[in-house]
Image 1: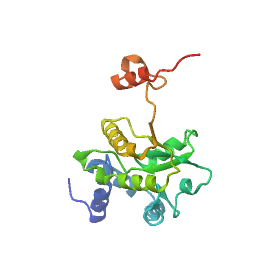
Image 2: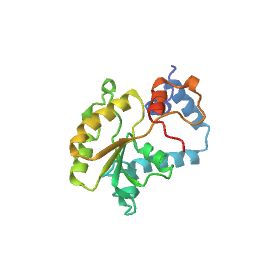
Image 3: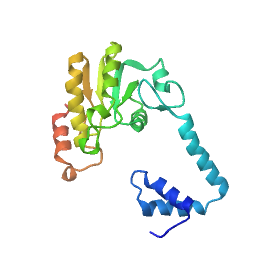
Image 4: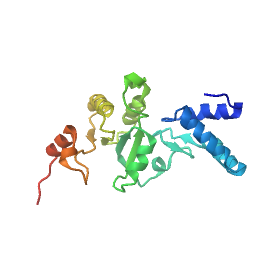
Length: 201
């Protein structure tokens, strides 16, 4: 790659740190930004600085918030007897968008993946156990992790460690998505759909 002025090189390096962004894509982003009005660049720069200065991690559930505790943890109308364990903060918005769940959350910060350094110590499992020990009001733990190999491994690990606490442990139902055909269904999804079949009235 040819040499560019230092501000361009620095921003390319910064963009390259984003997931899925290589040096060529980062350079394309920088050249696009160079064509924008300086006022727009200042707005973007201010938004990035605000992100770092004004966003905190909720000490109870570990999602992102501007407050001491997040809105969900502070909400007295939430069902405090149910705790939904998710991988990342973005999963909370996905579940909330359904309008079906009204309990509390716990963000693990990922799933087990030893190759990428995600060992049990790298997850917020200890914080989850501490929360469950200190709050006997939590009666059900929903393990809402992605149905990947790493997600399944994490579910098995958590289930084994949470079982002695005597709480009800559930997981998200799985099966065939609406609009899919059997021809393209994988064996795991099809097997789950068969085992979780419901009686038609």
